[in-house]
Amino acid sequence: MRLIGLLTVVACLIVLVVALPQREGDSRCGARSVAAWAPADEATRAWESYGNDNSRTDDWTGGDGTHSVALPDGRVLWLFSDTYLGVVHPAPNPEGQPYAWRDAGAPFVRNSAVVTDRSGRSARTVAAPLFPDTGVGEWRWPVAARVEPRSPGSGQQVVRVLLWTRAAGTGPYIYGVPTATEVATLSLPDLRLEGITQVLDQRQVADPARRVLFGTSTVDAGDWTYVFGGDDGQAAVHRAHVARVPRGRLGSVAAWEFWDGQRWRGGARPAPVLGDGQRRGVGSAFGVVRDRGTYVLFTMAAGTAGLTHVVSYWACSPTGPWHGPARAFTAPLPEGTVAAYNPQVHPALGGGGGRLVLSYDVNWLDAAPATAQAQLSRNVSLYRPRFVSVRLE
Image 1 (cartoon, rainbow, N blue to C red):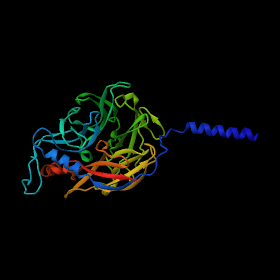
Image 2: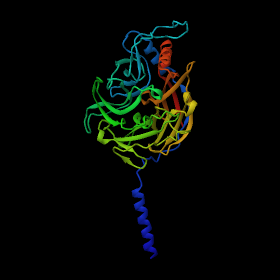
Image 3: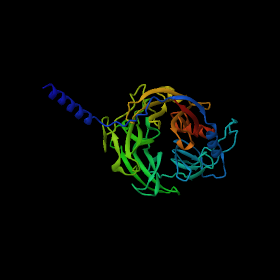
Image 4: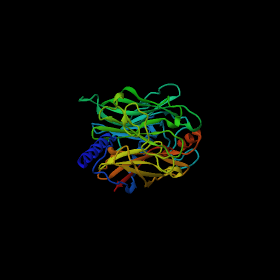
């Protein structure tokens, strides 16, 4: 009888283990945090030099969003959200202050694409905008991108770009109401827009604060590409979510699966993997990288510290549990009422061995968009990416 009872217990344990949800992990995983950091001035100066170059008057002079992807031929494609074009005038500005400046009526578009070499130099604006508006009062912001086969098994490669669509809003949504996540396909090597596919429509979610947009960062691991995203809650701390797609199938809507809190499911309502609405959580955009089997997430800190401080979390699985936050670095900022946001990792700029190159965006902090735009015009250096080099341990 004891033997039968023992066998019954073992059988129940086997059933329980099989029934538990699969959680991706790696035996190499361990705690990872920032041990040291330093400004990556060369990369920052490269964008300053390109933005101030007036050899063309229809190209990039400033923008935010700042995502990058290495192309097969050695070039790097940079994707920006809201972008200024036109002419940059040398210092001093009309007020006599030592800032290069642009005219108040300088062209402004919702997205742009710039190609550089691996050093970040030899920049050229490919298109501005590259992704057309979806309609009156609705636009597209590009986020993370990946190079993958045109179709599974194909020898031809394309660039898949995640897009956030947003519609004009008021009140807390002066920078737009989230509407959907899309995937665009760009041909190689000419980077021509071939088409756009909607992945997740959030218009039916009544509360805009609960709408989730995916693509702030992507990470390849094993057979999967993990796509991170966040909600649009107006509290100081947002919640992070994650989806997955078989590698090479970002453009296939049917291949997308979302973590619902217990398992991966197609068409599921995404559940947060990080964020308690108070001390722990992410900014509106954040970056994730996988280093030595550990997922490391960089985001602006919670509360008012989020205007200057970048913190990090780590996990052995994209679904968590996520450990942190740990202080990463204090973003060097110019003088004025400015804020840092959107820390992103750029593997195309080098690194490895625990060393990473991160960018962050800088903007004038004002609830009135017109005031912020005036400040960005009087000092063009405010609305360009800045870079730091970090070492993990």
